[in-house]
Image (cartoon, rainbow over all chains, first blue to last red; front, side):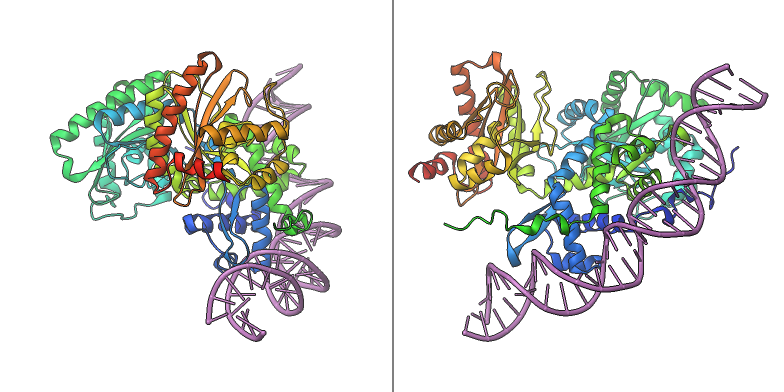
Length: 280
Length: 280
DNA sequence: GCTTTTTGTTTGGTATCACAAAACTCTGTT
DNA sequence: AACAGAGTTTTGTGATACCAAACAAAAAGC
């Protein structure tokens, strides 16, 4: 076994980071929080702890590249996130082959079960949503693209953890921790491991109000030709509409669509891929 | 009429920009071009004209915030656009109220005509795609979100220009110019103006192979309650499937859906909004 | 298997430039 | 008409982003 470079890994050392860029990125996040109405220069400067002049220069730079768009003039001027971010964000998602291929499957799945469906990947230990298909009538859940979800409290996260070698899964969980999101969140490492065993056993994961109260998710993995999980798909519904029987029905449908997707990518069926984990 | 601050507008003066941030943004664009396979540190540094050490520090900063994701280890390490960009990009689009409301309409429209449909806004003088619904069987056109399209050679662009006061439209065209994209592109300002008149007259715009050869688009505006255009919707098809009659049929369907969307946003019907332009 | 090459990582030193403070110019309000 | 509040511009300076070069370590070549 290889030594774990615990404190030695200086790659993320603050010394090798560019401060000015860090502050500039903080500004983007701040603008993200500002939302639709945008933010005013003065407020943004205060929020960053920078002077108006410095903030102004950063905003101008962003603006000239389309990363920030300005609306209004004079004292009513407001800054918002710009469309270059949309372009790059779309590129980032397009880089994941799964995103493109999964969309038709998601739409078919959503049409069949009338529930919102999503596709996610494991990125830096977090489950990140890279595609979604909203159900027409359904409640609009917070399924923003690029959203980081905790791996231990989401169906996509747990299914991908379950597909990983257990040691790797534990390493990820050590990083993210097991923060409590609702009274139903599994915050005990032993309990979570037996839940992961259950995922491997039945071939899908269930998030039973563990991330959001009243919301149940079912998810399972998409596999490549070597049997590695490249991502996961989930469907989301309300707890009240989710009896034991219905859950199994939905899981069967989900697995059928996911297997179709895996096959479409030239990967292994879920049945075979999960079986590999059971022998190990 | 107000004086146009031609050279006076010093807001975009290079002096008030942050160089280091500009270079860092160049790096993002470079990574965007690198695409799926990502880029290597050495290549990125060369592409930027920066030293490896500087590029490394920038990448670390991005990486720590999720704006860049690294794959591989050692000499096979590669950097790609990260998922934080997807998150912020999605936020940027969500900031446009039109994007959310338009999606169901786009899907309905696409289902009815079996053609790819898109919704765009006018941002900094360019038409920017903020939503799309791909037709299942159709050729996949380049309809990436956040993509900037020239206003004079796209259906969405021309319809939004036509809805603007003519002076404003001309100001935008002075900025963007009328670059030739295909042999059919209208590069003459007089000719374009009479085309815009035609848009106002019939209530929709046609891009007849003006942006891409063999591709025809029909587009029209979405209006708010004051009759201002907040965006535009278009459908895209192949020239070969686009007879004069079929074009008028499709335009009628497009206008019907767009009007429904305008109404849904509490705005004016296209019929009324375009009529306002005719009297002026 | 050893060497060579090529990669990412780390180190100081320095000239650059990102930043703060304050003056200025508007626009919208009282 | 005066004020208050915003965004914009100026200038100087201390922090820091950058380069060059050395280092480590994995891949490629013989």
